[in-house]
Length: 177
Image (cartoon, rainbow, N blue to C red; front, side):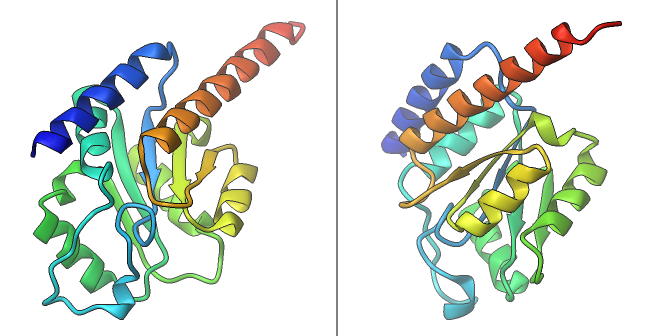
C-alpha cells in the first residue's frame, strides 16, 4: 500500500501542474490497467494491476476527476469479477465492457450519454493504436500506452489534454461574433 500512496502523491503533484484537467478519464482494461487479456484467464484467478494504476485512480478520485472504462473484452463477466476482486469497481462512473467490431465509438457514445460529459472534456488511455486513432477523431484526447498506465503516460496525457483544451479556447476566442 505504501507504493500506491507514493504513486498517488506523484500523480497529484503532476495534476497540480496543469490548470486544465479532464472531467473524465477513460481507461481500457487489458494491457492498460492490467497486464493480461481477461479472455485468457478464469474468474477464479487472482487479478493484479500494473504498478501505477491504483495510485493514479486514487489521485483522480481525490481531485474529483471521474473515471470510466471502455473495454472490448469478449468476457465482460471476467472483467467485472476482476474489478470487484481488486476493489476498484466503485471508482468508475461508467463501465462499458462489451465486444464490438467498432473502435470503441459505441463505448464512448454510451459513456457520454451516461455522464453528459462532452468528448473534448475526456482523456482516454488504451494500448491499441486503432482505438486511439478512431476515438481521437470524435474529439477525445487519446494516449497510446505501451506498458500500461503509468506516471509518464499520465503526465503525457494531461499535457496533451491541456494543449488541446488551450487550443480550442484560442479557436473560440478567434471566432467573430
